[in-house]
Amino acid sequence: MLLSDEQKAMLDGAYGETVRRLMRLLARLGEIYGAERMLKVESAQISGVSYKSLGEPGLDFLRDVAACGARVKAITSMNPAGMDLEDWRSHGIPEDFANKQQQVIEALCRLGVAPSATCTPYFTGNLPRYSQHLAWAESSAVAFANSVIGARTNREGGPSALAAALCGCTPGYGLHLEENRRPTMAVDVLTELRSSADFSALGYYVGERVKAGIPYFRGVKSARIDELKALGAAMAASGSVALYHIHEITPEARLLATARLDSIAVGRREIDEVYSRLNTAERPDLVVIGCPHASLREIVAVARKLQNKRVKKPLWVCTSRSLKQSANAMGLTRIIEQAGGQLVADTCMVVSPIEEMGFQATGVNSAKAAHYLPSFCRQKVMFRETDELIKGVIE
Amino acid sequence: MKGRSISFGIASGRALVSRAPIGFYGGIDLKTGMVIERGHELQGETVKDKILVFPCGKGSTVGSYVIYGLAKNGVGPRAIVNERTETIVAAGAILAAIPCVDGIDLSGIETGDMLEVDADAGTVKHV
Image (cartoon, rainbow over all chains, first blue to last red):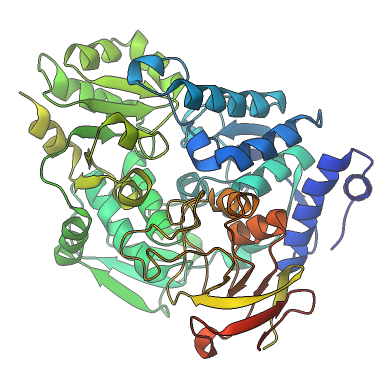
């Protein structure tokens, strides 16, 4: 693989042992996957931020990296943490967990990573443009950046995204190359998609079938940004989809021919099958909206439903710190809190220790959350559209 | 069987075979090495000291850290054998120094087989 003089110097240890180790990881990945050269990275998104998912070995690794004194070479944001970084006490997060979590954030901040703590960096100051090369981890954000924006990133693991941010480059293989962005399967959608949860269920069904491939959707008449966010997140959870196209909706779709592709059809029956498979509870102890993190539009929609109402079960709306600040200024946080709910920043239920907080069944509008909650948080799940979830917990 | 070397090193042990992809984050417990994904064919099995054989990875990008953490906690697999290793598993295996080979036809491998993985040469053989 062709390396610049600076990249060679990093490999030779001119920037210290840590940079050498990270550059070696990138070079090795490039060799394995047949990259001809390194590409300059314009933006990075780091996953592996929650102490719950990192554990002690991950924290040790980040501490070692942070000690090297290097700084990120491109705008770099981070995934959600395992708790609201300001309000963790009132959420009942154990003290020792909070302490470890702060150490993770401090290590990343020392490297120049923004403490954005969100899985939706594109809403909060890390928005790439079409055809730029990125190193993003966080599978739902990868699907969004590739598909909705038309930027180019592989599904990086947490450490390889961090390595790319610190070395300023990523090996040019996979989805960085135009020829690898063509669809592998057509999906004919035969039913009207009524909610984000429907998009999420569709994504879950397709991800299981297309696996690591690239689906091209036909028959989707309209889709909001939030619905595209939900679709990609679900496909990246049930499969490892990093890129999808939707006829006349996503930017690269019109450059691509689909006539010769194998196709599958998805109707209401397939979507209902996903709902019934992911549903294991009828009465949630907790309802959580915001997987991936809620957009401002979604926060507004929830606040409208809660105006002058009371919830009888805990209701969390998870979002980024910066959108929470907007919601504060707009009076939305107050409406949600007056109804007995909470607008939770920096975290989400999958990466926070909710099973230790006494919850056994969680209501969600996200197939991704429904997929991870049983194994990672020992939760039973009620998977419904937002309106139904809220209706179910209002007094 | 000759494949492609992903992460160097040599190891031998008993195969634990999954015909379905494995998602490490939320799929395998970091402290015990137990497969915890509900409904997964390996649910309840432990990857500790096994030659972990599966077609490809799936799911969260945090998987790399889970592989690294399993190794550091002493409950990781001795080696990984895939049909196709993607970046997340590759980065985890490289950082954790777990030998890893892909490009292998897994149909001839069953759980319990004694395998020797030479990831320097990119080979997997029954012993």
